[in-house]
Length: 524
Image 1 (cartoon, rainbow, N blue to C red):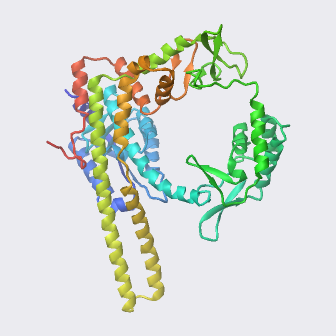
Image 2 (image 1 turned 180 degrees about the horizontal axis):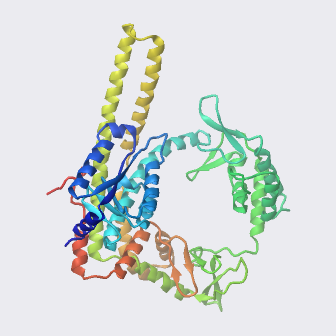
Image 3 (image 1 turned 90 degrees about the vertical axis):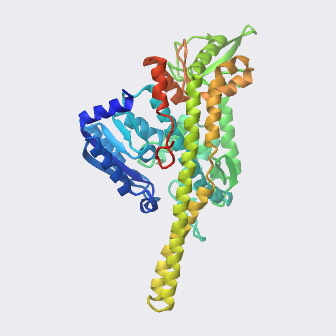
């Protein structure tokens, strides 16, 4: 008996389910991706499988309302009604927008039926099945991120014109400029406070803690009225925006707004930072391979390298927060611990091959989805232009007044501009995420062998690619992996806990490979 059939039998015993439908725009709802179509499919599925629908949740996201209130309501319902543990949804990208959504539902111990994909996922699913599903979620998120990058290009254009493209930082406020663009200007309340903080710190007579107290005494608070923290104040003092320059997406621009401090005050404040660094340990990564990669698990301070007797390298806690029980450890011991962390994400060849197949199918699905959206938007553009022509004729024939014509024209032209912007974003869509996914998988496979054959600098690059912040507990490295290596480590750990005959594992993995087209219809 396959896992899907087992889950369906379990579902029939449960007999109660929820329906969740979602479209990401009003236009999508009107042009082929409707809530009604999703609801019809899910209702038919429920009837065929003897499920009673307890409740329905629908979300329509727009540019003005990006949140998912119905999704949140569904989570509340599931927490309150423990007897209802089944969710029916059309397909993966209708349910999840990010990894957090997936983790949240997984914690609720629910059974999800992805009807068009023919998949049932529950706590009884094998770790390998969850792993494949996680890859699909990750790739869907990557695709969405790619499209959102196109939107950010407009903000980059504002930055290149010297206009701060986002919400005003503390000390400034957003106003409408003479040219109709939102700009920033000094805030009469918080601006003088920021200026005074810079001038005070530039004297070199204030510690960071004293300056934080000064900020609080002057009335500087977070938006909710709570006291500001030291890290928040230090962030202000390190931001070049206040002296007329700002960094946006890694590029530096000269601003067209009034600075709160002059360049001399800015330089003096940065020199004050440098002076306070004296006497503290800062590690050179070209010499200490594990510098800034490890923190002490006991106190959270950095683990730094130190040479002993001119030939041995040891790592130890800086103890910047007081006494710490963590002892010195040889570099060779740390190296072995990191090597073991790489072994934890090493995949068997057959699993790697299946993942490559899944990635390739994801790329195909997203290309076809983009083409469908493009066709729908082109159709909408044609309809909008036709309606513009009609109201123009109505004005010429006297059926509507000039005022009515201008009103309707403005609304239609706005819709045309929005459609054109979406078409431009789709035209820029980058499908290199598949190639990136392949590169990451290949890196996982090479990681263990590459470690032994790499020089110190190459090992450093490998660790930075795979790991984020790691902890040392005195005996071993507690790794924190970057995406998607965290998913790989989680899945492989679960697979070891639920060890089963290899044939069964292969059978379960095979049915999770993509065998449907972009419309999720069975293929030969």
